[in-house]
Image 1 (tube, helix red, strand yellow):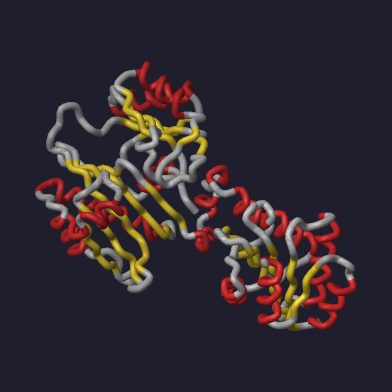
Image 2 (cartoon, one colour):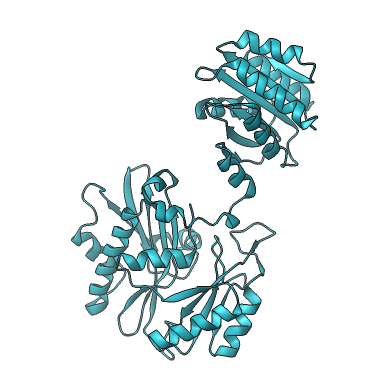
Length: 396
């Protein structure tokens, strides 16, 4: 689950990470009030207005604007709130901006001794350990840095059983070229950042840039946080931060219906029960000359309502030319699934694409009879090979 920048910074601040302070605003009036509050609390006379969407590269799309005075702040807030922001990380349609973060300007006028760094924390699956990735080239796309100057990217592997050790924090600060008070401030910063990462069960922290000011303060100017969805049951307060407006409507609907759904770019939709069977089904589709349009796991329940919901989600994709249902009846009985398919089909009236159903396992014979006797234009299959041949046939 992704968080907005303002939400991410609030979490970091609770763990003692120094941040660029700011307040979220949903309209121009709230933006003005946020700026006035920042002035009262920090003395800020200039502000930055930042679009709040789940995508990077906001500045390149015009979603981050400096505001040297209140008139400019009003203009920037007016222009950004409600805009369709297109960045390198959004679709061609972009994302609508519902709110902005009004933040203090932390780049002091005329200062020349600032430095921007890149810091992220994530799980290295090959190592089975957390990893801190960092670079002196902050403020830039890390992908570009990795491609052009890979020697400027450093990694520090952290044993999760031990946590971040003092010598590792000092090593990172040293590799970033810090010294004196900035060195001390950074070791505190990275320790607090790692504690936040593990404390909220995050899967990604990305701070770009981390700013060293001319008076040697270390501040998180931006913050991207991704939470591990499998751990949200332990963090009900964080689960409440979810913004479904930033997510694909199909993903949201599938989640509400208890379906595990991932959209892909192919032309054959699949509906299965179990992740392993889903992978095998996608292989079948590829071998038949098609390409999987999605991963959709209905789990142990496949009644008419759930199947109908799944059909509705699948058919929103205009690229889908056929649907393959592949169910192994272990926990769930095949005849119940078959009845669910028949009922869902009849409730929808018709399907605009061919439907292939392969049911194996408990009550598979009864299930096939239900499908065959339904009178509906459904292609039934017994073996995986037969299902593959049916896919090939309907795509021809």
